[in-house]
Length: 570
Image 1: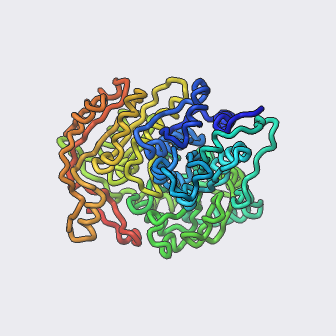
Image 2: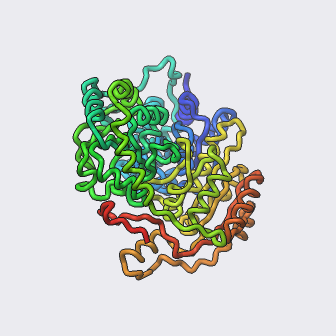
Image 3: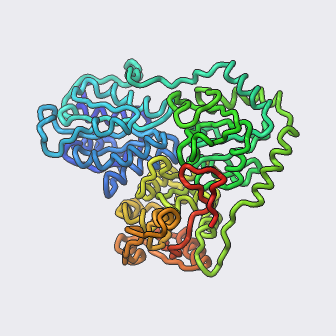
């Protein structure tokens, strides 16, 4: 059948199972919006306040559901406004398809109105990107984009479509009759290519070790391998620590959970890595926030790295063995070998040593007459329940949420890990809430945890939450500071504070009312608990401003490039 490019795009979205799109219209994508008008019963478009919010919403949707998120933006400033969101998804391996319009083919290269070189701008921060000028290439290109985004190591793909390609007509066949699209030659196919020899060698090393540790990251969640992780570490009796991206993959109350490692991780977890004789790294990329000094990290251990992306092997930390493949498939292959060879008493003395380190872990002091961040996070976790999804912005509140928020399920802690994008949280909360509802109308609690610094960046998305009556509870830790910047200035720059204590007079309660939502304020733990309980009863977005001291610090802390011996606890 003959269809316009815009109609082909709409039908391919439906064909790929897309029922949710986040975006903002503009001249270069009006043909697409006109086509989507006829498919509103199948594809719901959510209009955000800003394209960056739309990109973060698509990201949050993808992280909460495991599906591919879709963001749609016009040319020029529309495209450049989603760059931060694309980079965020790229750094954290989130499946995302970004669709942008561009000026007509005849106007490209002429500095036309709202023209930018979108594919050039986004090339370093996408898994792949495409520029479509011929409508006949559109369907196959879009199908490839979804395939690339969701296969192997997941990530964002951008498709930039000229306006004339959207308006042009050509023959189109549904996927059932069309040849399945192939990935372009520029993209390396990341198949599960490990061998039985790889598995046997890893199992042998695990059986021979006396002080093993598993470390895992977001790859465990992306691969839907949390059950396999739990079964494996219990069969092998190996304690497991996680990066920021691994929060929620393993219940923190599990006796084999070591908790967070790295710069703001537990001292006991970092001690365990320093003393381990074997480290099995699962979907874990050894970022500089966990492998602070790559030369000294787990220096006594044999390191086995399991990753679906061969380019990650030996990139940050030199390893002794690499197993390239899907981490879930690797764990399934390892489990029977481990069950045959592992004897539980082998690790008894090792686990006892870890328990002694745990007894000395830093624990902040409670104060029920003030708002202490660790008590605040524990209260949120208790009142919201295990099924709630947390999204965060970036800074001190992010670390406190990871340390004390007690997430027990995968996809329940959504944060900007690699890019560290302030302003990420509200858009992500919108996407997560819509994704969690899944068209069922189920109002799963989504808690957006932010600081006054991060929140000022993208609080305009409040109008989006209000427009769609999304029950997002935003908890604003207001310390009248850029808290993490101020903490670094205090610790490493002799308390020479500059530009980290803005004199802002924002009244978040009044501002909330101006947006049409409920604003609350708390100064004590009891006051917060009462405000949060009320927020849970409100059918729509709520802000709770929490007044905390600007002197609160995220501890423990290991300086950049340091080791556990350099840990700071005061």
